[in-house]
Length: 365
Image (tube, rainbow, N blue to C red):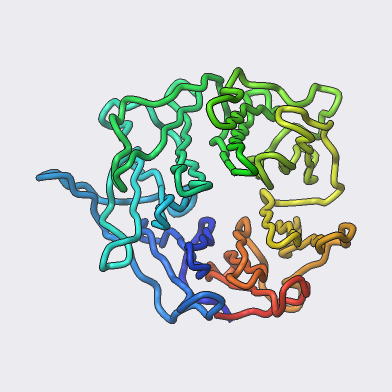
């Protein structure tokens, strides 16, 4: 049984500060919809809620229309617990909405718009504040192919001048991915992209107090002696200080380990055929990787805390539904893995782990 909806693109499963999950999709009418859990570790509510159909600024109005096939939804949590949703409209405007209002989410607001001559052109990638004194970081591809970033100001709506971004340079062939964390007294940020040569590139920042290593120039992470490792999709970060995983042009999933800040191992072919970018989640030492197999199965490879990697298994073989989207995963308030994906019938499906680390999943709300 699905949780409903009729979509073609990729759903996104986001986690609120209290632990309850919410799924976001673009409907066939080009508008964004959401469905939330009734509470932490609870089933999803019955109906879908539609976001506002228009963006308003003073006397100006335009339809908040997104591409059902290609829109990339991103989310992040503000240091005060407010959740933000970002997406690029078909007119090229970077729109966001946030919680903390009586309606659940605010009206659409704008970060920038290519139609107004601003430099940001691609789909947004956001990462949450890692502490109460940190803030959301937003990355996007520029008109000239470089990577831009900016941070949210003190106000919940203050993204500053739409023409003012930190320019990290580079010329990329996909949207950036970004992640940051706080460990001990150190903030660390990693940004990965696919270059025009389909290689994997990285820049990072590490800050401890008033000292640290700032973002530098883009580093190519492997050479042409690994031809099958060239990227066919977007990389996925497991942790700013750990692995990055991606789908190679040979059809398999690959990984690299960051042993220390800016110190990487060589690429490793995991030998796992994939028809989608992977999805990776960690909770309490347990980790799960999910991906769509070439025959339309939802695959999972799990590692229990302190144990070796387990063999991959299909989670949908008995469901009688073929997976057509990249899966999106998170963990429940009590640490169980939960996944959403789109089936061949265009409906959104939800699988949830029956107990923490059990590896046994059920389908439904």
